[in-house]
Image (cartoon, rainbow, N blue to C red; front, top):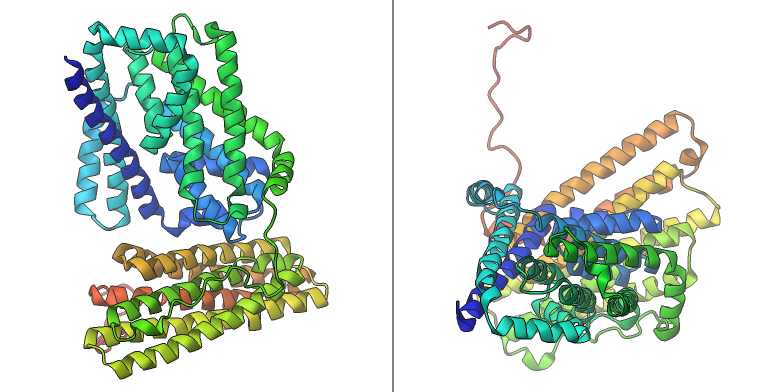
Length: 565
């Protein structure tokens, strides 16, 4: 095989590998919906349980980068603290390494099984959860297929005259191989794909284990840089966990590279397949970084605050708040004016999301600064709502088509929901938190866990609702309605358990009974107000009925109740 033909075959296999990894991640995200995000938020956890959560989610998504981006979003919303977030990222890196370990085994026999089962599920249940599971199975099959393509393309290159020259150069310039690993992993946007590629090439002796180990270490650093780049639009303070994770992995990778330069025989394991050696290096490195990181979380937080301090607050709680998106200059162009209303409604949703995020902290320890910021945000939400009403009125005076008028009406209706949600936070949740603090009450452990679970579900659903507002994705809208029903079931179950605790005579449950029940009801109301964005989308797709009432009552029967006919 000539070099150009080899490069074409290799490029095709690599892009299939990248597509397959993304396919698996997309399928898991769509199948799990907000449930995955809810697990990520969870209850207050220690560093080891948080790392285990990160490991599991990275295995499911087959991507530590995707896990990092999700975690940064929740850290920015105040739902995950720094130590918990960094623990999740460290665990996710190890989870990603374990994915590489599993995929490196000889699983060719699984390909036809996965293609058959996955293809049938994807085509038969397209758009539903089972269809997304089929997508995941197809993605795994494509990953295995791509690895086979890489293997077939690499075999003839062992006899090439050019490959030994490149390999011998890299053997003498291990540091160059490390830098190439960083670049390739970053460009490919997948450290999993990069490590699998290195292991496959090494298994056919295209790469030596020393060069392959340097590439693997570089790929680990390149993979850590990806979340830094992909979250560049997030405030620096909220990105401290990705900076800390990159620093830990960067120092670890450079230290391991120095060890490789001083003791190259460390990766020479007689009897071990070269590809398996590289995968083992990858897993051991990530395990070592995890243990080191968990042991130094406190130091990492202090250093991150020193280099990236918290932003100064002017006391109004609206520092850095984006300006209104309503532009009077485009009122005569309905499409632009409607886009401005959508942006303003989305801004309202972001502000309400920020108000909801710290509610459980206010209940547990009560911060005057958090309360003041929440109240200031509520005033900003009210102002945005008034501005939208006036702006829509001015649009109607200009003249709109039937479709444009309907879109403006739907956005205005949803802004009413968001204003009502902000009102519930301030006038209900903050009032209940103040009452609890004033009377020095304490929830029972079970009751507090139930409230935090409901709050985590609402926080995840708010983010999903705002995504639905922008994308109008039918599958996401369906999931939002399903998650609304799930929250209703959780609230109903919590009420029953609370009443059982009252019946058993638990004093803590009796003292906080009204606060517990009213908090649950308020969280349920806020969730319903956000979930309302899904109904117009589902109705237009003929997936929502006008009413749940039956056309007419079921006819009575004369059947006996004893089972006889």
